[in-house]
Image (cartoon, rainbow, N blue to C red; front, side, top):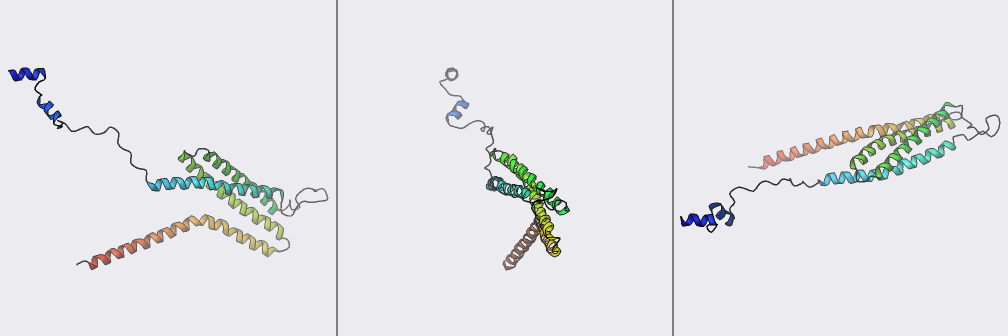
Length: 218
């Protein structure tokens, strides 16, 4: 009875109290409420930095295309007429090749300006990776159209200048100019084919190496 009275007064610790004093908890500690965040992969960080650097470099190309096409719009092939009712007008304005040059040059200028403005807008938000990535993909497609239109405008200008006096030069110029869009449009497919060939060669090398190691084992 004395022990019971002392336990009620707190003089004798209970069983649970003894375990707390001896650092022996009755139950395991609960799991943490917040799961620790996994470290960001280094590859993802490198990809984001490459995207941002590309978004900062591409406006240089688009601005250069806009400058070239803007100047070409006022220095048309063949110059301007100096006499007659068409004074001040382009000399070859009635030629289909010069009309195509004007349209293609205008298309290249508009596309390059749109891409430049989009990239400048994206660079004002350097922390928004989604916006930068989306704008970069869109601007890359628009810039490709601008490049192809610039090359086509150059070919039509050369054709307008040389077709009357030297037709074979105009034909060769058109043929050489056509190789540019073919290379640009087929290059991604060539890269994929090369990547598949390298991957297949690496797999064959690994399988051969593993087979040789197994044959050497007793």
